[in-house]
Length: 309
Ligand code: ASP
Image (cartoon, rainbow, N blue to C red; front, side, top):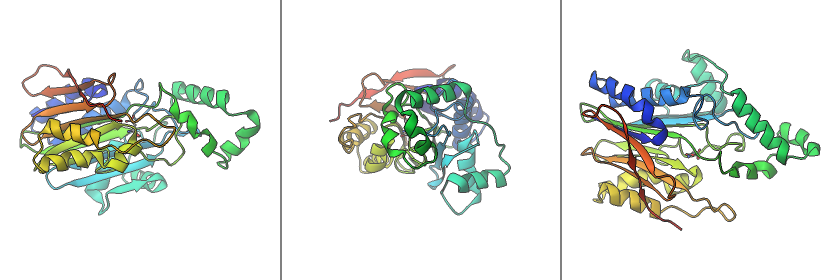
């Protein structure tokens, strides 16, 4: 049995491993680990406490995938519910659909009995308002808050300390089944309604028992355009090794748009034999978390660095 995740999942892997050891499924372990990160108020990239959008609204994205049959569930731009990963799982289990967004996702969460909660914390609100006040002239505030002129301020999303985050978790259970999941509050100060790669099956998340699984963090638009998580798994299907597949998927990333040079991307992935790998094109983002069932605690492993243009 194996769990891997982005480095912010480190603390969440041991309780998830307990679930696997007690016979729980890979999906159960992925959901449980991600819920713990979603509850961590100090993680400003996921769940409660996540950085809000340009208007100060926390919009959460999540998806998960079952490698047995590629069943998937996803929610995007969900407001007012602290555990988007569980809502995504319920979409998968209860609907003939894969992906709900915005008001529809919130309506579904309410209908399924999920508890509403405030997801914007004081710290996140203070950071957001300080950033807006420092950049948007007073004469422009009304147009911003009336949702009439927002495009001009999307450049605020280039906040270097705030842009990155997201949690990825991949599990292999005692039956050899694989599941993957991703949850995020997305880019800080993003345009309202913006979806990143995290809730998009094939972009931020992909899983297939026959070949393996991959999940991404980073500049989500690039993973959407490159179908990056699916690319990793497809390359393994085509015969590349796990490491080669991760390297090639990063090399195959599309370029960032002009003026947005940050083409950062991270991948965590497993193959069907239980090998694991982390890869990144950003030297400083060189860690991911993993735990096998014979380990007493989760550990950090180094990502392979793959320079991309
Ligand atoms: N991929 C996420 C997104 O684009 C952000 C991140 O991983 O840092 O929303």
